Length: 226
Image (cartoon, rainbow, N blue to C red; front, side, top):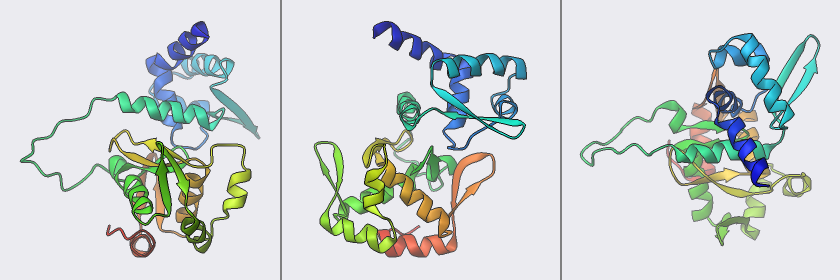
């Protein structure tokens, strides 16, 4: 077990491979060419790194036509990479300085398959305050009132519970240092907000844009003023 852990840590610890894993937190699959451009390395070097990550089962590859697309082998790999980001030293700011504007990636972003950043944490706080979800022993659980809330929002909890993955979990946000929502519920919330055009993805970034419609719906459902 110790040897396996050291091997896995060594694989992710390499600078180029760490950059690959960070890029894949976007939640989308990338070709080797796209990854080599994103992490500023040659196609030949990228092939070597991808082969090592595939061999360790940290990544998987899917072929579509002439192209091969790489992504995390499972969601747990994404959670590990995301958790590692919490080791980034927190930037100390003077108490006299009030930051009025967040960088987009810290304000609202996707973190693999769920919403994170200032807005992601605010959504979690709102659901806790409304007792839609409750925190018990550092775990999240949906309340009876929450079951109705999710149903009204159009999210089928029974289907979510059937998925072979974590149903609902608090996930420590690396930029806010507080919890946002992960698991299948986090994914369903993100997808619902995208489908309803409350939020939109941005090109070549994990930053998320909140639409005018989204501002109104987030105020209505989450009691949050954007």
